[in-house]
Amino acid sequence: MRLTDREVDVMKVLWERGASTVAEVHAGLGGALAYTTVLSMLRTLERKKAVTRVKEGRAHRYAARLERATTQRRAIAAMAAKLFRGSLGGLLVHVVEHERLSRSEIAQLRALLEKRRRKSR
Image (cartoon, rainbow, N blue to C red; front, side):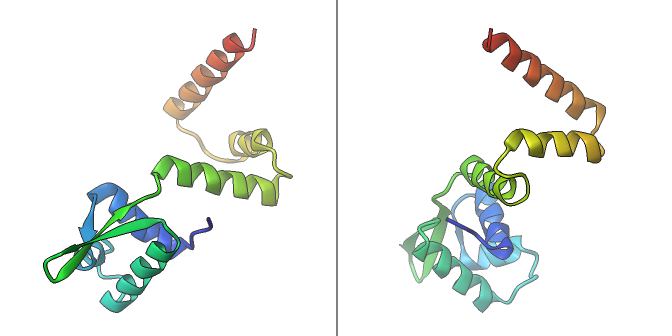
């Protein structure tokens, strides 16, 4: 399932706050979008089966159905497919070569690569 950038913004609010009403999602977005736009987006996400909806009094409470990690993996795989012929390694090499990484990020990458190397023996 493909999510637009704005839909991802809505999903981020739900991942961070948990189940929320339209008004709560609207507030979580900092009022950057009209209330009715947020409502439309939540309805679209429900049709895409990315969120669930439960009636709560006169309002509805929406909850993320997709996990953040799953959504991240799919987005990275799509980017790798588009820009690196499907190679996640190519994407990682590009990031290491061309992006500014903190010392802690470099240490984390080293540790993960070492762990992977030990597993493959």
